[in-house]
Length: 226
Image 1 (spheres, helix red, strand yellow):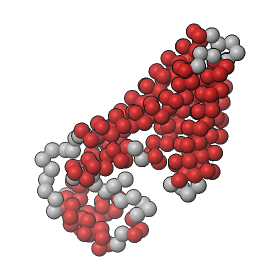
Image 2 (image 1 turned 120 degrees about the horizontal axis):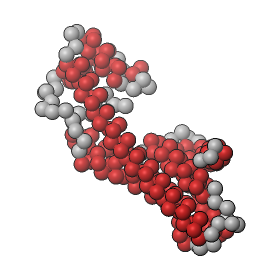
Image 3 (image 1 turned 45 degrees about the horizontal axis):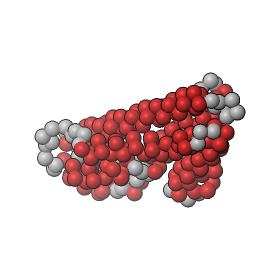
Image 4 (image 1 turned 180 degrees about the vertical axis):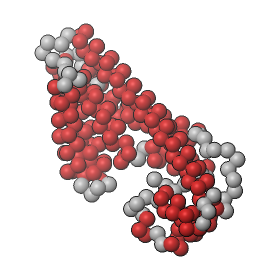
């Protein structure tokens, strides 16, 4: 979380990068993959006919389409919430009765991991800068870059899970398509975890853990009737 995000140029230029941040998007991809797997894993390859495969394919695609739209909408909602929080923080700093209370507002808006590195002089410098900012003509609103970022989130989630159902498009035999689909899903689970693990310094461990976690969650979902 940043302190304030009120200057249009820096905020807009970073939106797309933040939306595609692998750390923040890994859980969405994991959820999408689990949803697809609950559909494909429930299919009996030995008994499934063309009708069953078609129904499963439509359901899986529709579910991921819906999840991509929901994720994009939630991204816009969270972005708007961040803007509102930044505006409120600026107002609280500007209307603080004392310099000390203003510094407290600034300190409360700084991520806890960074705050210990900030001295009173740093907090006071930030407070003075914010207090000297001109009045905002209007509350910040979602801009074109925010909507572009939301579209990117939708595409990342939907396209990222699409390969799991493609084997059913290219192979008519469910006994061929189903194992390929599961292999692709496992590979994507690993790649998602591996990408996330790079930021933790343990890509292989996190990648394998993501595979195990994904399969366990799919088994739980199927056992509960998902």
